[in-house]
Image 1 (cartoon, rainbow, N blue to C red):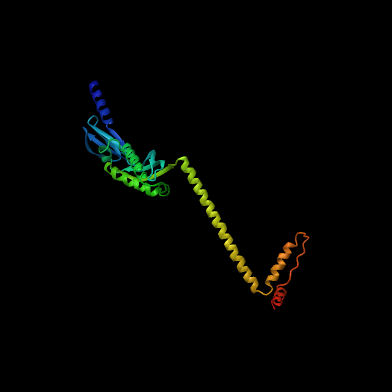
Image 2: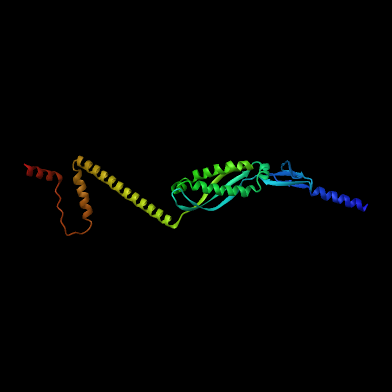
Length: 248
């Protein structure tokens, strides 16, 4: 009787040790005596202990941080560039059977692709066309990782670290550009003011007595402050008459 109890206990422990819970976002890759025998879907699953082994593969979107890579651009500028890769496993069987460590392999390949692509563009393109450079890196990495059952969703270049002398040169260039724009804005303002004054003068000249009214307004502004100077203003009509008599 005691031996039967021990036997039942061993059987129960053996069965319980073969129970596996697979989460909704996971897939189970089962190997029987070292050979692939199928995938297990989410839920409570049973494997045969000793004879079978199951490896869970997370199929959610994951990230790989690419550390800073020292790169010499096409125009011979040394920069440090880092990026992040967003990927997900779409084929759990390939991710387990085709590569030893798909995360590490994808990271190493992404680093190599980052160096290759950024080394073939100049600094201006790297700074101003990050999305295009990132798309090129994604395309290269995606071709390789597809064999491992991995889909690269996107690649984002995060930081581009420039040498100090290059930063100073770019700062001077930006300052010169700001000064150039300021000069252009001032010149355009003066031009607009001159056009407005010219139009106002034409309007005043076309209205009888308009110049006289404007002259009186100017005198009113001058008369606010005490002054020792005496200003004598002749009407425009009188000035014109004197001018005509002088010519005759």
